Image (cartoon, rainbow, N blue to C red):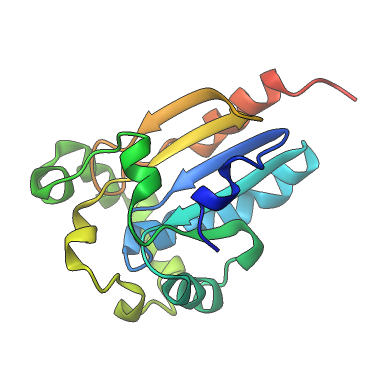
Length: 174
């Protein structure tokens, strides 16, 4: 399903993680971390949504091979959400940014290795220029944007504990 088609339907609290693209190994790591955190967010009334660049078929590859819940995964083949949210794009951001060094920590490499057990390049978008797109993490309460973080470089993801804490300060106790 394409992401922009559901933006106007967001109700309640939602975390929207924009992955670089479905063939990005760092994005498989992030999707794996999101999947592991989903129950925690769900129990707090927060919907987790992952968006990636590529067709719905490319999204399905990630969903089936990682695995990742398809009902939380959206495709943005034309990078419309990325453009709308002003996310970074370019060769330098993708390959030469100092923020990308975070990927090489032992903890991150172990998580990435586990996430990539069933990895395939088949999930990479057909439009190869899409691999130069960076992602980001956003928290919405309905249509209101509460938090925005643009990834500075490849693998420079927002810490999910920080995102969870932001959500929990915004969700009324029941």
